Image (cartoon, rainbow, N blue to C red; front, side, top):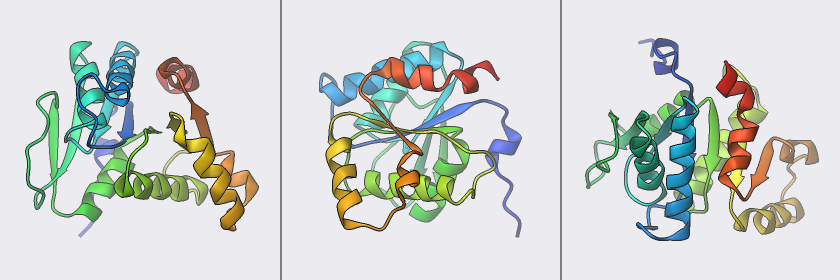
Length: 187
């Protein structure tokens, strides 16, 4: 059975955002995600997340507050409901199907600090971009303070080619992401 990509059915430019499920309203990462969601929506971009709490809720809330579109890709077997700021929920049958949707839907990726799931999402997006497995090369932004230390460690302990690190853009301000998406915004 052939799977039809949602991206081909939807001309909306979308930024997929990954991050921890733990930050709540008032936490620095939640508020940064909320500001980013607002900026993305104000620039005509939809947001896509895993659909639950934390950074996912923050970015969805910011997009919602700015009148934007937010997609939440949830998993049927997970307990819990999608956050209340999701405009469109996609219920994936499995975690693997969820990851595929998150990758396919994003024209760009933003990765906030997080746990094992966030690291897996970053590595999958990075590997897909590096191997040209997506329709277009998609920017990957690493937002926040833990990334320089983590990347320095990876450079010491892995055999990832130096030029592959050039696919990642480390940023500390939401506006840097918007500036880095200028080509996507203008399309």
